[in-house]
Length: 318
Ligand code: TXA
Ligand code: MG
Image (tube, rainbow, N blue to C red):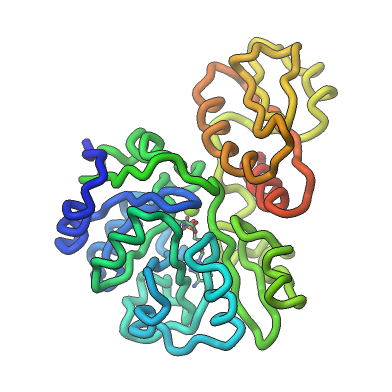
C-alpha cells in the first residue's frame, strides 16, 4: 500500500529511480513519473489502465526549463504563461524530439503546465526532469481531489502519495493551444473563458469539442464518470420519478426535503461557482458509494467556472 506523507525527499528519490508518485496540484491529484524515462511513462499508462493514444501533460516549475523539450513558445502562449502560471492552465506547444513520443502519444504538440501547489512546486524545483502526470484515477473515472481518493483506487499500485490536502480548484486545468492571435480551447477547466479573454478577445473551442471526435480524450463524451447512472435536469421534477430511498442528488444550492439528507450534496449554498467546482468530484465520489440506483444532478449557471462544471456533469452522465 502506498505511504501517504509530505516527504519531498522520498518523492524525489522514488521519481529518480523511475517509480511513480502521486502529487497534489491545485486542480486534481496527478500520477507522476519522470517524463524523460520511457519506462516510467509506460507504467503511468499501465497503472491508470489508460489507452496509449491519450497523451500526458508534462509539469514543470519554470517556463525556461521547458526549453529542453519544447521547440518554441509563440508570443500569445508566452503571454498566457505569464498571466496564469503557476495555475490551472495547460499550454499545447510544439514538441522537441528529446521528449519520448509516448508522453505525447505521437502528437507533435506537448502539453505543458506549471501547477500551483507549494509541495509540488518545491518538488519540481528540485528535479532536473519534468513530471508527466495525468489525473491519478483509473481511466474514465472521476479525478481525485484528496490523497485519500488516490489511495482508495491506486494505493496498491504505487509507492508514495505526496499528501497536499484537498485541491483548491477541484476541476482539471483548462487546456489551450494558440493559433496566431487566437486561443483554442481543447478542454474547459480551472481557468474560465472570461479569464482567457482578458489576454485575447479571440477565443474559440477546438473542433473536437463541437464534433465529438476527440483529439483530447479528456473530451471524450463519457469520461469522469461514476459507476452509478447520473441524470441531469430539473431536480424538483426528476425527484418525483424515482424512489427516494434509492436516489442520490447533487444540487447547486439547496437541499431537497423529499430525499434523505445523507444522499444529498449541495455544491455551494451561497451560489459560489468556485466553491461548487471544488466540491464537485468529491460529491460524485461520495454519492457513488451509496446503495442508490441513480444520482440526480442539475446544471449550474453557465458562466465562469460554471461552464467547466457543466461540462464535467455532462460527461459524467453520458
Ligand atoms: O489539471 C490537470 O490538467 C491534471 C493535473 C494532474 O495537472 N491533469 C490532467 O491530466 O487532467 P489528464 O491526463 O487526466 O488529462 C489531460 C488531457 C487528456 O485529455 C489529454 O488527451 C490531453 O490532456 N492532452 C495531453 N496532451 C495533449 C496534446 N498534445 N494534444 C491534445 N490533447 C492533449
Ligand atoms: Mg484525467
